[in-house]
Image (cartoon, rainbow, N blue to C red; front, side, top):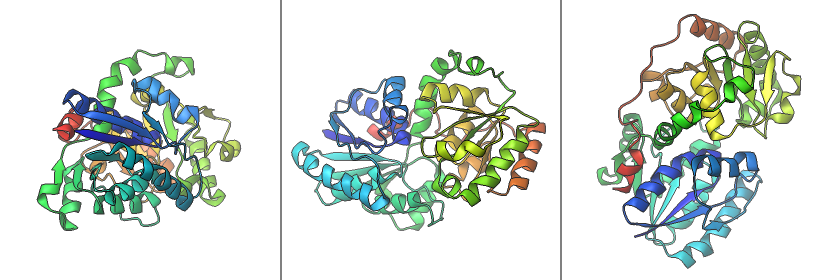
Amino acid sequence: MRVICVAGARPNYMKVKPVMDALGTSGAEVVLVHTGQHYDPAMSEVFFADLGIRAPDHQLQVGSGSHATQTGKVMAAFEPLIGQVRPDVVVVVGDVNSTLGCALVTAKSGALLAHVEAGLRSRDWAMPEEINRVVTDRVSDFLFAPSPDAVGNLRSEGYREDQIHLVGNVMVDTLLANLDRALARDTVSDLGLRAGEYALVTLHRPANVDDPGALAPLLAALGELARVCPVVLPAHPRAAGQLRDISPRVQVIPPAGYLDFIALQAAARLVLTDSGGVQEETTVLGVPCLTLRDTTERPITLTEGTNQLVGRDPERIVKTALSVLEAPPPRRAPALWDGHAGQRIAA
């Protein structure tokens, strides 16, 4: 069996690695395609090095652009490649533009399409990722769901039972495989921080960082939180320029590689984020998480994890953060988030 695995952006790397490994162990010929949607070394090469991902077999180098431009570039570059490689199956992961572009090309090529992280729904159509998720699922042959709520979404949308597979969370595979290595690093102490005594923040979604009117209240809330708890914020490249007005009490650092970021999460007293993956990672690590969005496509992190949705209201963010610092939620994680999702997918 010849399988193309597609990765394009930072969230993809952690998801595709366990699938590639398990497919390789099962005897499949695995062809890794990197679309180049994320091309900054801090968002790409460092993750390949940290995770031990081999060099891609093909680099599409599509770069940045609007959603239409980027998706179109992916499709135009991937179409001749899939004709050349002639895979039996193409595996796409997550919900970025590379996922959608390669999914559409595959669906018209005759190869089978497998979507890892199928069935996740925020029901927020203002999120480009929601559109990518729904359309990718629609044209996929294999739907690999990370949680029972995702299975329920797929069933309610009319997918066949033989398409839907509850496999668990591949992000957790990567997290558990690398946790000891991350904890052995001096990441926390090198920043002058102490384990269990700081809050970690990530901000990157356009709805939060591209609109100054939306970003300013979030930065004000972080400044207030920093009065009672040290706050560290690894700056995503798309948000770095907008963070100039943040409180000097908030420690802004360059983007963190995978191992360093896991080390920072594991030792945090509290995490505030607008990332989907961080909601999952904090749940497995047992670290309280506040999601700075009004919706989440990962509701199981609310019902069976350590995550809370707090939106963007600064007063609510600070009030909830102080409450969680005083009385953190109990540690709990969903079933099948056990480090073996990649193996189930390969099977």
